[in-house]
Image (tube, rainbow, N blue to C red; front, side, top):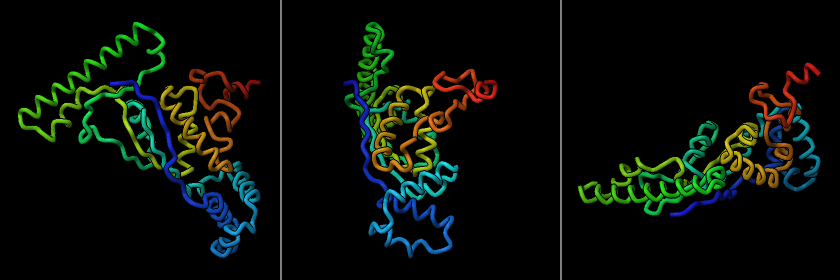
Length: 246
């Protein structure tokens, strides 16, 4: 039984991503057939810098649907079930999550919130509870096996597992879904754990496809003002109302 730290790895992304996005955007505004342009894109005849500039300019105009042609697949471990429940609310994505029904939690790993970790007595109470949960899970699983549940013992014993239980998940999102995800989850108002996950994913996306993600992040970073109401604004940027009154 131990505390687990977050780890985010890029497994795969659409090959020739920049060229594909350039072709998709150009098809919207070009009289010709982009399949005829494709060999020129792959050969470098049309410079990547030119492609990136074109993609950035069109994105800045608000036309972003063509970025759906490119997707990223991430493997994530060391997040809580609380975090994964927030993650899977983002609909335009594919998820494959470690099952508590088939994978036994014999040695419970968990996520420790920083706010609890900073308070010695809170951390002690939290870790004591995790130890009790671990013990209760093991006892219940043994009792279920002894009474004939055998391979199905996990699915009933898991009912005592907390939201702090560590989980592993694979997620695939296209660039448009990722941009929306970052707008919401890189915001200072997002919970600390999913914000850390979004920041880690964004750092990878910025490195791999800067034409799309160089200015990615919370929505305010692109707008230059906070789209939240005054009640929910964090103060980093002025609200729309504050700008109108200035």
